[in-house]
Image (cartoon, rainbow, N blue to C red; front, side, top):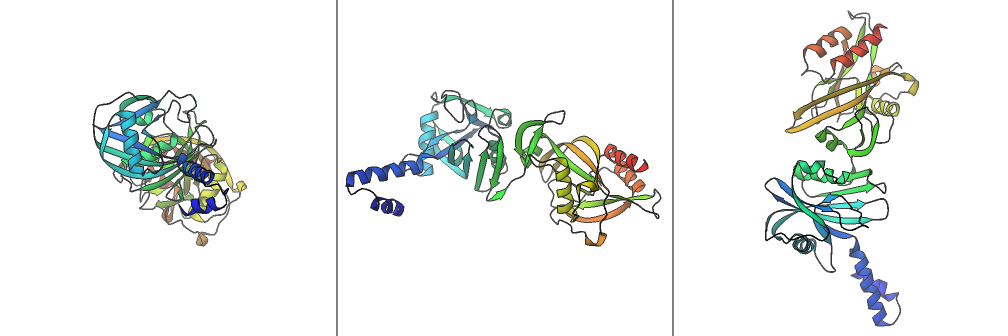
Length: 369
């Protein structure tokens, strides 16, 4: 209100014109503010298929119900009114789950107050913006929804406390940035079954919830060793106990995901630097091809699905073992192991490592050559 009064001082003397301009400013302030509500019943969400308006940023998408604020409304007043107008239902109780900042990349902006409700009554009415349908909560993930909507659906499913989520798109459907509570989220290129990019970008945890194909890099550090029976030893890392998958397991020397838009070689160099403190050059890496792998397992009470196209590299450069700097959030420790002993461990105890036996065979064959 203070800003509105200050703006009025700079406006024409005529009081009527001044008031009109102030009111216009207030309307512009709330033009991009809206509510979005997901009604829940019997394991289903009430979804709106937006098919009516031709000039609609949500055209043909499935979303929740809601709409823009009216002047002077609170988020709660707005969501109750919009749900009643669009569905016929009257909300009795609701949960204010988060604030979603939406940037389409083509000039459309929304500041959406996100709600859920399981306590409502009334008789459903037709919606003039599309078709309403109760959809099983798991089936919602297969609908034509915004990529960023899957992020907040995941947060809702995981009962994350009130959150602020900013989603930025490229002017179409491609997600280019996601920031949760001020922290950037990892985004990956979703791949086709043949390993090529599909054009879809998705957040890390959604990728592993859905089992989407994505790219990774695996960097192996192997060196000659006179005291090892095989003549070689391999550097293994022990994964941090806080990892979202395979905590505490022995793993490849360094590994990581390929961020959206990045290439395998630059990702491999980044992972060596981040996880081990090795600042390598492109010529220090020998490319060995792609390994395709899939597994699914429950970690920390949640299903984790990993469908990866792993680009394999052999590190051929030098490094000072005493100068390794481990990334605590990823790596608990490292150890050298005889190549043949490692093979027996990988093939005989799948719980001790998260290394694919056929990938390890590729590395062993390379060293024999």
